[in-house]
Length: 230
Ligand SMILES: Cc1cc2nc3c(=O)[nH]c(=O)nc-3n(C[C@H](O)[C@H](O)[C@H](O)COP(=O)(O)O)c2cc1C
Image (cartoon, protein in one colour):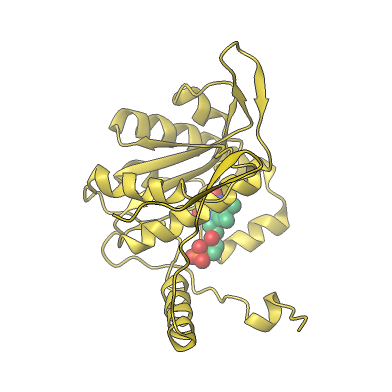
């Protein structure tokens, strides 16, 4: 393999970036193809119990770990839960919170918005899906002598990593749900996470159940989400 070209900048090593090289026509095609691929992603709430090899999920998590992050702190932990007893505990705790949310915490407007999605407090997929990925944001790191070290733009960084995680799940031919059974403090307790980690998302991953239906939602048009200054 060719040796990496390096240069010292500000006293630190930098490596020559190798840009991808496509023709304009290829770039138009590739960007359109990727949009069509991304547009097929849907949140799925009915999972098959068909097993998924751990290696696939680990590759997906490695992809999420390539996300950009504030000052490259990579302030995320992905807990991969396949153990049935833990999934059962997580389901029970999530359903307890979701029951409270649906019956006492959510506003009438929120409940109305959720009607078309068709969700309620039952979360059987937290046990059916072969894997749950519990994503934690690391609000600080702990140095060797126990001192707190700052992380920056933690939510933005972890949100980006989760976006990449979802696309990697789709690329592997699997489905997922972005789930937030709030408050999610139970996740840190059940998974015995350290004090510097806060739950961010709970993502069941696997194959869809046979004949899975998803809400017939519309995505906003380009004109609604993009303002051009050219
Ligand atoms: C931050 C966030 C939290 C969400 N929380 C839940 C949730 O707790 N339960 C659920 O069923 N869906 C949840 N969703 C999924 C959304 O309902 C879904 O993304 C939206 O309806 C669009 O559908 P699509 O993902 O199929 O495009 C959440 C999505 C996001 C981005």
